[in-house]
Amino acid sequence: MREVAVVASAQSPCLAANRRDDMAGILLPVIREALASIELPRDRVDFVVSGSHDFHEGRTFAYIDSLDAVGAWPPISESHVEMDAAWAFYEAWAWLQLGHGDIALVYGIGRGSLPSDLDQVVPTQLDPYLLTPLRPHQDAIGGLQACALRQAGIVSERRMAEIVARSLADARSNPHAQISGEHDIDELLTKPYVASPLRAHDIAPVGDASAVVVLAAGDVARSLTDRPAWVRGIDHRMDTHYPGSRDLTRSPSAQRAAAEAAKSAGFTAADTDLAELHIEYSAQEPLLAREFGLGPTTAINPSGGPLAGRPTTATGLLRLAEAARAVRTGRADRALAHATNGQALQQNLVCLLEGDARG
Image (tube, rainbow, N blue to C red; front, top):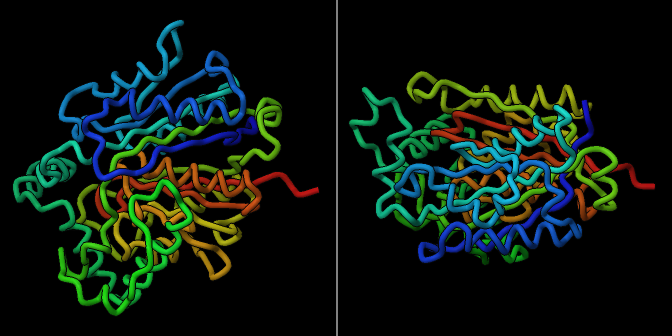
């Protein structure tokens, strides 16, 4: 296996709406920032891969607009995934393993503000015969999972409020966060329910942003940055798409992905200094922490995480970018990045990152 590392990343602020800007307008400054941070000319990039979602754009092949920012001439090697761009990251890592090139650029664009009503979009992910016709609103299944977790004693409403308060306080140091600040826990518990036991603050706010991550292999990575964030292990797994066939208090696919990534990494999720978890609801944090075996020594979502802003289909890639940035800047020696796709943690990707030993 080739050594592959994250050598640079950048992101735009997560805003409530960017609908007047086209994809290229949002993406181009972020690509320039990522490449400029390592003084890398664009023509040295061997492979480009992206993630987005046509449903949220309201048209097919919507990502084509983003190629104006990437630059399609001279001809480039390019690919695209129709899901969170964390899976584009996985494809780039696999492409580099094949030895076709040494540098890959991954980007994701989330424009969740484009649909006038997300409740008309999200149900299309569900079983088309039984669940989609019921038209559950976008947070209905999240509410069912949170309710199951509360009833099982895995989380309480106060614990959920504590997670929100901590996340928004941590986001104060993140200039890209959509919301931040301090919140009184008792005051949060007085807010009305959206989907019991979820309140509005328990739901990651949908926003618009783009993210870019640059991967490089071996000595090329070492030549581009003093401290690469090496991808020591990465894996993704999925559970059945039908929520009624699953125990919503568990996430076997997340646990399996972490275990398989640990086999390659030589260390486990519990050995990491921080974990960036792709949670769309506050109740999911204790569930994932249990499945990964995270203890009190692992800081969870020190960037504020998705509860401070969730750009659809770029949120998972941002978790990878934030975890890698912590390693590259020396704030962590080992980090875990997690991404999810689908309803109630149906699909899960886990990446274990590590910096070189400090000399």
